[in-house]
Length: 243
Image (cartoon, rainbow, N blue to C red; front, side, top):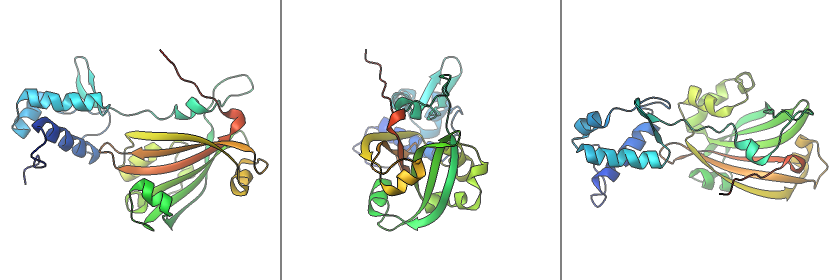
């Protein structure tokens, strides 16, 4: 089958765009790596340079690729480290911004609850990995997180001590499982904390907490991770630039 076979009603550049993003998701090129030139892609797929350029332009507009003047076109590596700081202010007493430490409380294979299966696009009661994690400032827990992953994709995580791998999970997903988080959708709500999360956060039951739900996807848009982070309302902030 020709690599660009697909819905014949779609424009050729759209078929190429879809094929390229699948190849990116399957690690033909790694984040930060240059893709072949438009001329090389034109020869590989037997398409005009103009058609190739339209496909590349579409992926640049979507944030999958980025052009670097005089160097070429590269797979963009998203930066998620600052996400927490959009919603929470974590600072030392002197006002210096700090990244909370990470502590994995548990990691285990379970059957997906219906909400998790729906979020991850899995059959009901599919096997998933559930990670319970807390984030701390000093000895004080400031975030309680539930993280859900498809087990088949992330099985290697069950075979290592994640607490020895550093505070950021996405680089671990990439290094151990070959999975790159390319985009994410976040939803923010507030609730009165229940007994389980009150214990983790060392808060009185029914204290106000802010809840961030995040659905993370790969370059092809396939769901990779669903997480729910609960944080002290006292740390909550919301900042946006309006122009």
